[in-house]
Image 1 (cartoon, rainbow, N blue to C red):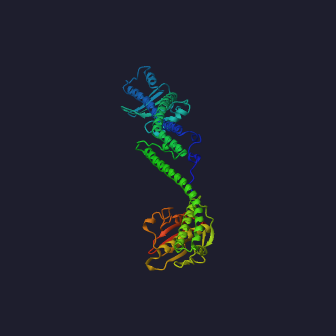
Image 2: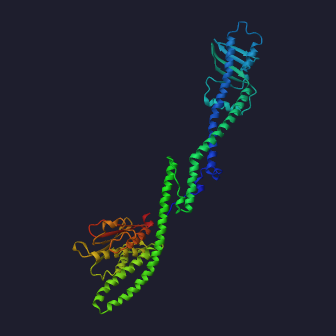
Image 3: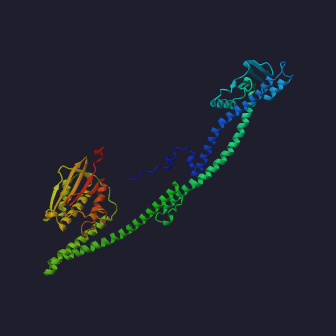
Length: 486
């Protein structure tokens, strides 16, 4: 039974529903764009956080310059209006610094500490906090109250802090985000197109050609022009192309051979059918030769009749082998000893004085098998043994002996047909169960063993030639029923 191939819905079940309707190239383009945009998003978050930090650091740097101005100012203070110009240049409402333990303040007006919405300390801010603050500044509307920003100072100051409005910061972040979005879209588009073209040229295109070739080969597998022409690529796709070409060549050759054999088999079957009828008529007429008074003709008549009989048997075996496939066995509980005895009676073993027969199958042994098909298996194996014993005799001057034994082994039934004849020649063992190639007797065809092997395989069993010191021992193993083995 061939394994079932998963359908297209099962293969693409892990993809979104919309992507399952697209071709491979379209799926590749969509996924490339999505992955590039995902990478841009991952880049955007630290970028906007870094922009916010730098924007605030720039204001702090300007505030530090103002602090240096304060440190160098005379005792009576800066000229009138200088403080306001310093604050406007920084873009802050107030600048404070601690210099030598004393706090210096530049302010547009009096502002209590509670008047700020929040405090941003750049001295201890981590990346996670910076990203969170940047997103909050972008998403949330600017606070009505200003924010306090604290940073490191240069010169003699311990630290510097500024109080600024959040609206300019949010405006700068939005402008930066817009510019970054445009640049990201351009980069994403160019990258997606480049990656798509590269992958389409290197992977998708060759895979599409492989799929098209397989579908064309399926339509006419015997056409040699449908075989793919592999490229010189050294990667996995090149290996797949070469493997596909080898497989298609082998399959095309096998199909042509099997087609020729099928046509030849049909012709042989027709010839055998007519030849069998002619030989049967000749056998009937040759039976009358035994009644002649001519001693010479009378001496040749038995051999002629026997030759005609073998020719009829050959035609019958060829027709049986060339029929349609054997039917599926109908398993029944069969008493093997009785089945063996029936085949021995059909072969006339009780009348063959030169061959002794022993039915050593236990009388209570029951095997699950098709009685008709198993009868054919036994008949072919036992007939081969009788022919070998009749023509070549037993080894070492022993009396020719044929024995059939059976036993149960772990639920399976093991059947052995053994004789003490000349055995199977070494040259015939390789093709022992192949039709027209596994004959072990002169003038034989090997169809008996081929038919027996096919019938045993239909039962799910095995047939083999067992090693033996004398003669030939054929072992047939019938598996236990499923209910018994479970």
